[in-house]
Each structure stands twice: as C-alpha cells, then as structure tokens.
Length: 225
Length: 80
Image 1 (cartoon, each protein chain N blue to C red):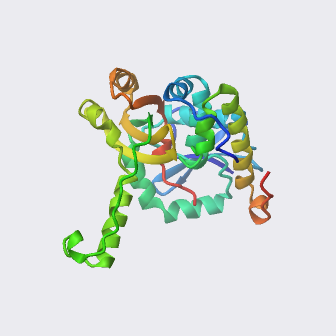
Image 2 (cartoon, each protein chain N blue to C red):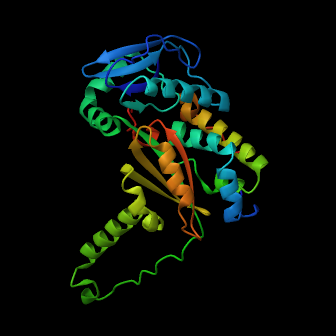
Image 3 (tube, chains in turn yellow, red):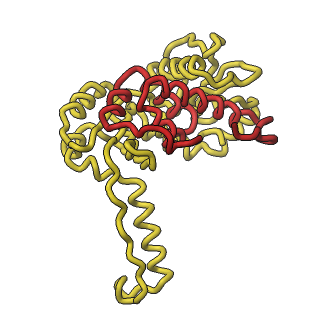
C-alpha cells in the first residue's frame, strides 16, 4: 500500500482519493492513523505525480488537525507499515503534537556569501582557555554544528516574526546565492500575515523569498524508515 | 554535472525565479523527495534561466526516480 501521511485520527472528510484516484483508507495502529491507498507499484517521479501527491496531502491536512506527510514513493506492505508505526509511535506522536494546528512556511535566504571565518589553528593550550586539543576539537565541532542550524541573516526580522513563528528549522546551503532554507511552523491561517511581514522586511543585501503555507513537510521525521 | 561553466545568477535573477510558478516545482521536490538535499548548487545555478530550471529539475527528478527504485539501488547506473 502507498502511504501519504501519518495522522492522529481519521480524516473528517469521509471519502478522499489518492494520487491515482484510489480511495484512501485510514489504517489505525495504536494512537496513530496512516492514510494509505492501495497501489501495487510505486508511481514514477514526475512533476505530475509530485503535484498529485501534494494535492492529496493538502486535502488530508485540511481534514485533520495534525499531519506528518510521508515522503513521496513510500510503498509498504501493511505488516511492515504496522510494525514501523508501532516501533516509532512515541517519536511520531511527539512530532504530531508539534505540528498540530500548524502549517509550514518556507523561507529561502538569498545573498552573497560572507567570507568564511578564519579559524586560526590553535597550537597553544592557553589560546582556548586552557582546553586540551581534544576539548578544543569538540568545541570547534559543536560551534560548526550550531552554525549549520542558525540563520543570523534573519536577525533584523526576528522580533516581528516572533509573534507568528512557533518552531524553526534551518538548513544552510553551500549553493550561492541560496544561503539557507528556513522552515517555520506557524498557526494555521497565519500564512498571509507571515507573507506580508516578509515582503515588508528590508534586509538588503539579503533577500528573502517565502512560500507557503505548506503541510508541515519539513517537520515530519522520516516516518517509515 | 559541471558547475563552473554556468553563469552564476545575480540575486535578482534568483529572487525573480524563486517568486514565479517555477518555484512551486522546486519547493515540491524539496518537500516531497529529499528534504533539502536537492537544493544543490546545480539547481540553484539553474535559476539563472527559466529553461534551465526545468532542464535541471528534470535531471534531478530522473535521479530521484532511480534512487527510489530498489533495483537500481542494487545495481546503480553509471553517471551520465
């Protein structure tokens, strides 16, 4: 069966159809519900099938409070799906609680790459507050990890965003002019307010492009792996 | 895929194309397939021209299709 999403309950709308117009079924496993369609082979990746998949997920999202979209192309047997949902029930439940009543905005941060920070090799112990080489290495790795999940370019717009953004996830890119993708969870219905805020933001030379609202694609764990 | 031969887009080009309907396919690919991994330099360089967006996304969709196919995962095809 082809899996579209994991939900907390059956969709409010009675009869929803999948990307091949197959009827959708709610497979309940404990507190979770998987929205599935009968399909014998995985649909090929194409613009049409991606759009069709997205339409199905959006309809499901409209019919439930909390949805974790499942990655395109997830074709599993009922036994495997049931096993996975049982095994990952706690993690998926937490993710569903996070996205309940919310939707995603995607923010692309565009601009010139700032010169990389020069990290001088530290050869003496006192250069790093007396840390030994192992601790310095770990501290540097931690700083690198943190930088990879931050978007300092948004600093000026953060006070205004604070009233709308509930959760943030940042992915930095080594692909100028795209510097970072920032995924925000906002309360449902706040997409227009978010867009207005971003359009009014003046962060030159940084530019922001917002799309959405989307189902919370970027906040769904790889549910079926 | 060769990157150095492409003209890097100006910020305005990229912004313009991110703001057009071409964006939605790019966003769909990001949302539905690999969650960020697809936004590689090749795709973004492609944003310098609308046609290139489609050309490169097509390549990308084909690659994704192969990745999703377990038969190809066992016997990967050679790079073009």
